Amino acid sequence: MRLLLTSDTHVPARARHLPQALLTAVDEADVVVHAGDWTDEATLDVLESRSRRLLAVYGNNDGPALRRRLPEIARAELGGLRFAVVHETGAAAGRERRCAARFPDADVLVFGHSHIPWDSTAPSGLRLLNPGSPTDRRRQPHHTFLTLTVADGALHDVVLHRLAERS
Image (cartoon, rainbow, N blue to C red; front, side, top):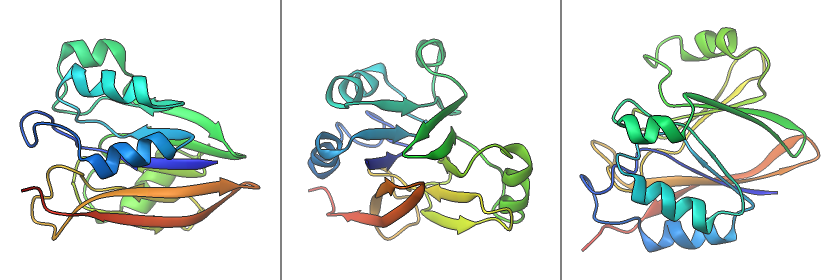
């Protein structure tokens, strides 16, 4: 099962539209995971229409319309792993411990908010993944998203994709 992870798209404030490389990856994925901060319903509509399956949450910048359509926390079993998705996890210091306590029934936690790619594992075994942002890199060197494969109850081929700068 091929997954695409993204977050913090912030369209149209940070970009007029989603990057083509991201949309191509959406078309190739079995499941698209978005960890919030869409800021507009049109982007949600695009991903809903192009995704085979969308697992998504709202973020702190998402207004009432998006909050009516999306949960704060999403959960799904994918390829034998229990996934949880949330926008914010708090400060980087102590993140693994806090998230393992908050999501004891998850194998993988996908989160956003910081726009900083993150891949770590808590002592409990919880894998924490933040795909960064495909449209608002902030202080990061690149716009990013993640792809991975889930098979036989394990993550494989976790790849951080760096997007070319928009012209």
